Image (cartoon, one colour):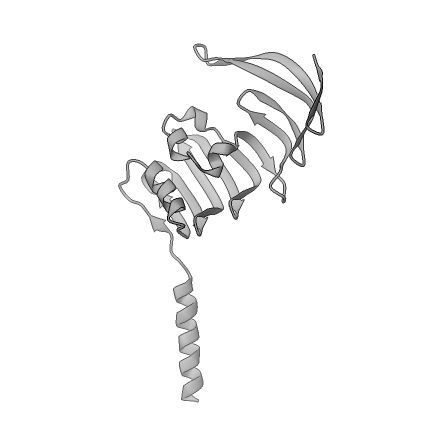
Length: 175
């Protein structure tokens, strides 16, 4: 009888030790080198920077779970990942944040521009607004009318330059 209680205790202790607590970086003023370092070192866990509104989850150096970065009440990066592949709602506005381009260099975040959603196969799906264009994706391919923009940095405004039509990611006409 004592033997079975001992094994039960060992199992409970093992299960408790497998639950990892978030790693909280306190009093950190710059997150870029830490984020990239955690990826390069293939770390696993949830990492939180409470004084900078930044958090992310990694599994063996790949984004796995939620990533969130807020600067001055503006969501700069938001997404859910599974094995470094985005799934569901996604926001990437790193062009609004000077240091963010450095923070996310050489990562999957740097490669995906805009706001929209990913399907279960991690393909852009539905309406997307990207830096200089907006329109619809269907399973990762542009479809329908897309508006192309030109930005005026001095006035912080955009002008519609033209609308184009896509079918299965192929341009079929310029308006």
